[in-house]
Length: 352
Image 1 (tube, rainbow, N blue to C red):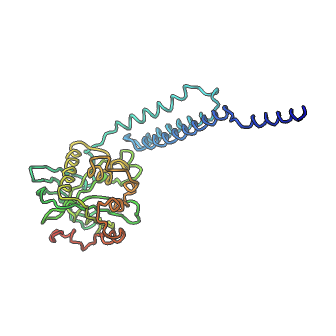
Image 2: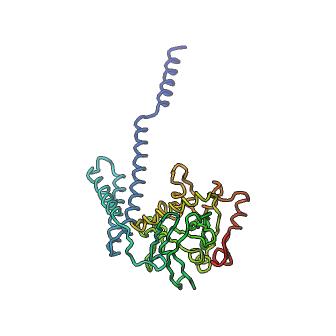
Image 3: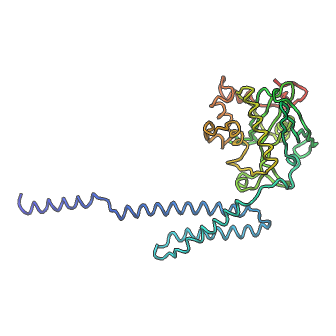
């Protein structure tokens, strides 16, 4: 190979070697951009959460809440705008503004206390307690309303006594309102030998004139409560006056397990009567609390999306063998529907 050929070959080798290695500066810039994008998402989410927490805070004047929420949002978006400014043009002190504002909102939100002292709707006006005296359970404020409509009723709270040894089985109930499929209200019934079942429903406690809000329930807007009452009350009003579709599934559990579950409920009910707690759509609701009490060993209660979309809680129970799985699921669900004529709603008829 002559001198000219050798020069051309070396030139091609140099061109190839220059094209292979990655530019370290470009790699660093890429990582920096990913970091900025992640920080921007974090700031956006905390801005939205903080604005909602302020709007639904315990400040009594709505206009003040709105103005403070707008101001907090402005600080958040101003911080996002600063991410687009060249580093040399940034004042490092500006980065303290948003974290400080968020820390104030977070601390304020944490200190908002739940209360038992509010103007509650009448069906939720009294909290039950369960006294345990040996084998006897004494349920105070046992609810047994007689309804003419959802809004018109005869309010009856009474004391009910029963033997713990008479608890033989338990049922899982799902109540779906019109148009719901993925969401439902779940609750449990305890079947008592030769007596009507005891129904325990975990609910968001509402004030007069207040309605339940899915998003609001994540921002300390509803207290938690347990309703302990008769099937005629807790189930009957849902079927006969609210147009809900209620299904009932017998839990596969030995009587000893069922009694242990009822005692766990009793402990929670008494603790709540002594100290109020907030209802939370995701962390402290009708379904998550049932699972927590049924599986005190958290390792057995693995998270499942069907516990969040609790209209599928019956399918979750079926797949885990917690209810009868000897027939196809959709047939089981169809046969589980509680009708207006069901013996469950007639206290004069003995339950199986």
